[in-house]
Image (cartoon, rainbow, N blue to C red):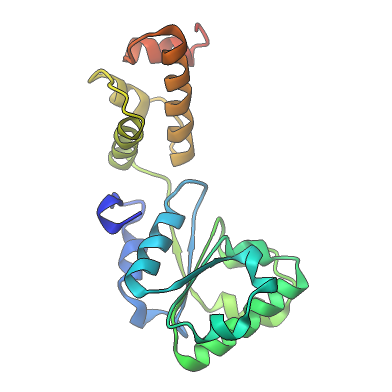
Length: 210
């Protein structure tokens, strides 16, 4: 979860740059948003470690000690969109953001969508979130998808043929979630059939022949 383990590519370079430019955040607030497995939690963890931030989830805010969160030197909130539709959680986040803005203390939130799509009911919270800096994580390009597949196979200690990763990059959906899913699927199939992972074997899996 460190910076050295995060692969910077065009899909996420702008978000990484904004993490390093907290002076440009409106009232010290920023929102990382992107699809599942796009790197939001990893970036949040990098920032939290480097800033010495408290790390909580949106689901925890309704029962959290607000004074502690307001007074933290830096605050990271993962799955911040989970507060939507829950009055206590929405009110808690509203007070947290106000208190932290008054102290000029940075707050980084992560969610699947920009705050306008969270479904927040509290109007004052909607306005606070709306003026936050938003940093999108985009769909991976070929270089990022290649690096991710290589890492996923390495994490599972799987040896693959040289032709497998380029074959997959050209055929799977352009998403990190798709890369994670195909690696798991190929690993399971290879173990069951005691086969080596090659482009030919992957083609049989994708075609439903195995």
